[in-house]
Structures are given as structure tokens and as C-alpha cells.
Length: 522
Image (cartoon, rainbow, N blue to C red; front, side):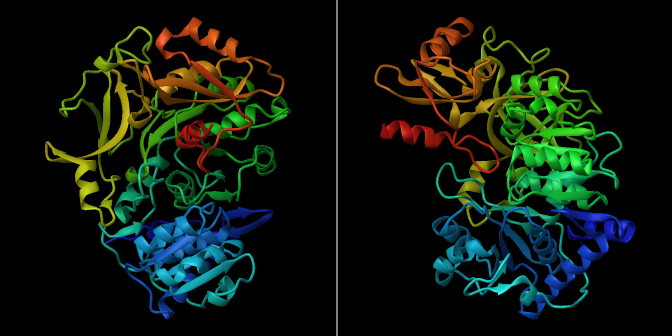
């Protein structure tokens, strides 16, 4: 028997007076925070809710997210995190599919809940940050109490996030207490001395997303460290928080690091208190990493994972050294390999990263599959999707990531691109990331994305969407010539469009389907 929140209970017992949460100038100790989770768990129990009941969190990174998250687990419930950028149509699917009975929402978002409430199992709505029609405030909802932590089996579901739904409706990912506990424990030990009680972690990655939830929030709170949530990303505000509070650990997605180095006063930032910068969510362009490390003291360590794997499966740990361009080695306790279409393991290259211009990627790449205690129980109520997602082989249950990559003989893995992002032009395979890496090296390019668009003769052709630097004046013809000089002819963008910004998710991933949709409307 276990419960993910027992990890927090252990930290409370050992570090009760330490700061658990620092938010906008106020601090909450571990003892105070534990009391708040007890009041939330008691509130659920008094309303007849408990083991297995779903509680949806429709919030940005604010302290009530942490209270409701751990309070729900303490009562034996299941957390359903929802993107606060979603509107009624999107949350309607999540609430209906998960059968959540409670929604904790920002006051401004409560109207979206009310629009779909009658079509769902929702019984209680809790408003954060003000009053809202049809909802209780958090203060009204909470009940005094110090309940025991509910007993849950290792295989019981603790959190049910939803995939982004780039193909069809979002799927509920069933992550168990064991999945999340094992991954938080593994992530805590990937840096020198592990996560320490004197660490201070920046919490700007969205908590509804598994990266922010496990690798940042849970590793901090399970080890007595201080967690500093930020409700929204702003490069200047984030750096100011790091400087003012002497934060020691920073995690972000590539777009955040790119945003920092493109600030007009980037050279004035002081990040000397930081002992580790982690990056994930998508591959960081090597040029962005290089520029960041030229400006600041901490190095950036790239990792890799998915919602379905709790998330982290690979990391360039400082303990093992790092290889720029790689997502790192498989983390302890997890297994991974690169397989072909027949599920045969692809032989590793001698040492990566390889020169993708000279190598035949079809010979050295395959799909990355993973197995381990961090891999999800399965998609909620979707037996056919589960059958497609897993392969039973060698007594193991291997999860198909959908990512194309290769590995080298030293055990470092390299992600070439998402299988669904690959562009097939005139019979040749083009991986957008390779073209994007080159574009980031151009001094006039602040941000870039590459996607395939329809082409009558070639089937698809390569198009680049580029955000210029503030002083940049590069032209379309100059970009094409630059790419032709450095890439095979079939890989160069035949179309270039300059945009003010790229459409991104709250976790920094470029929404390439929106770029294609815009192209179709043009």
C-alpha cells in the first residue's frame, strides 16, 4: 500500500519549519501547507468524496493548485489537471470523460465550467481568487481537520492528465501512485547531491503539465526544498525572481530559454545562484543552448519524456556528463531502446551526434520505446488505443513514444523528430528539427519552425516560419540561399514566411497544425 502524498508527509515531518511555497512575497512553511491539504481533504470527505473520485484542477500556477492537488491525494482521490487556457468546449470533454465530481477553478474560468456542468458529473465548483456564480470560494469550501492519508494500492490511479490531442480528442493518461513516486524519486537524484532541502526551485512550467508537476513541484516538495510558482511566463519577471530569491534550480522549455537570451538587457541578468538549468518538453536548438551558456554561468541539461511516462525517461545528468544534441542516457530504473518496424533493435552508432547530412537516417534511426515503473497504466477507457500504444516483448511492456531517434554506443539517445512531423517531399524524408537547428544559427533569426505544406508535384514541400530578431532584416531569398548552402537541396525551405510570433502551447511546443491551417486559409 502506498500513496504519493506520503512523500510530502515525510518532508513535513523532517522539514516542517522550512519554506514549502514562496509566492509573490509571502512564504508558507511545510507545517502550514500540510494543514491546508488536510482542510481540503476533510472538505472532500464531508461531501462524500474520497477514494477514486476525480477532482479537476482548472488553475494556473498558484498555491491553491498545490493545496488541492495534495489534498485530493490525501483523501484518496484522483487529480485531473486541466489547461487554464482551455475554454468550455475543451474542458467539457475532459470533465465528461473523467467523470470529475469537483472542479477547482480560477474565478474568471468558472463561467466556462457552468456552461458544461449540466452535461457532466460535476457536483461542486470551487472558485479561486474571488467569488463566482455557482461556486464556493476556497475559504467556504475548506473544513478544519487533520485526516490520515488514505491507503492506496501502488497500481491505483493518482493523476489523470490529458494528452494534447494533436490527433483526435485528448486521451486521459492514467498515472498511478507508483508511476509518479518512482519518477519523482529518480528525477531527484539526477544532479549532484540530489534535490536538497536548501534548494529553491522556479515553478514557471505549468503544473497541469507533467513536467512541471513531477520534475519541478514534486521533486521540490518531496525533498524539503522551496517551490516558487509563477502563474504565467514572463522572461523579465522570471529572471527577477531568480535574482531576488537566489533560486538554485530552474527548469524550462526551449522557448523560455530562447526568450531570455533575446531580451534587450539579456547581458545584465545574474543567474549565478543557479546550480542547474534543465530543459525538456521538446528539443532545444543547439544554438539556443550555446548562446545561453555564453551569457550565463549555469549549464543547460536536456532531458526527455512524455506524459505517459510520468514523464522523465532520459536526462543528460551532470553525474554522467552530457552530450550536447542528445537527450541523455536512460534514467536509472527505466529501460529504452530504438526499434524498427518489426520491433527489432536498431544498432547504435559509434558516437553521436552524427552528421545528418552524411548519414543515412533510415539505417540508424527507429522509434524510441520505453519500459519501467514510470510507464502509465493505460489510457482511460480506450482499450484500442492501449493495444496500439504497447508491445509485449521479452516479458516487458514497451510503450511506443512515436518519436524517431537513434542511440550511440555510450548510451546517449538522440531524438530526430516526431514521426508525425516528418515531411516526405519528392520521396525524401525531411526532419523539420534539422532545418530548424540551422535556422537558429542565423544571426537575424529569433525563433523558427518548419512544417510540411501540400505541393502538387512533390506531395509536400518544406516551409519555414521565422520570427526575426528586433534588428534583423534578413529576406526570404537570403534565408533560402542560406539553407541551400548548408543543406541538401531537397531539405531547403521552398517557402519562407516572416511572422510576429509562433503559435505555442503553454508548455512551449510549436503548434504546427495551426501553421498548416493558416497556410490552408491563405
